[in-house]
Image (cartoon, rainbow, N blue to C red; front, side, top):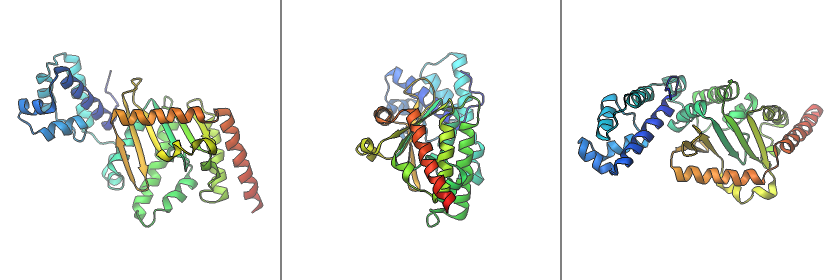
Length: 296
């Protein structure tokens, strides 16, 4: 596999997973590795957790310790490590200071994902928001975010949409909305009509699958809150979990946590209306709103 064009966050993840797998193959604990390299235990833990990028020198030392001698594998991991230390536009200084670390990494994972599963019980997810809908939501944070924070977040939110929807080989998007998300008039009747009209159009794209959980079905499972599961390859274990609450968010690599949310998503998917019924429901709600808006 070539690392050419890969994002820093994805490259760092691949390096840390490869190093953890190689260590586990030896049967050594992280403490043993720390003793054998003369490093602190926290350094080994941070490398394997992806909290820090690993230097080329340290990577070679670990590969030698683990007995990895295949030149192609070594070259690939060194290239991945080099990429992991690079910054992309969304992590640049002018953006980075206005975004959380988890959100900056999310942007990179979305650009590399093969499939993204969204569950959103309250709102249309950010990646599918039209400008007027996104502007209204972001303006609500006038007490907790600065004007510049809100400007950057709006720019980045709209760029996320383009990066995922408007590319030839973008990820498969699977979205579950609670029925209440269609009824909540974010930004007023006209804004909500525009958002639902766009959502119905997007939902007909080949790479997009949208389903609605009827109100009577989503009550129990819906308490888990919104989340995204991003698959980075065909391996189900190669995935990350993103969750957002108010202005706080987190990116989780824990396999058990990712699998729990994936299973929850599949449970909700089975309870949901199929894609065609969902589109008809969205279009009906959009038409009702548009009719009301035209009477204003």
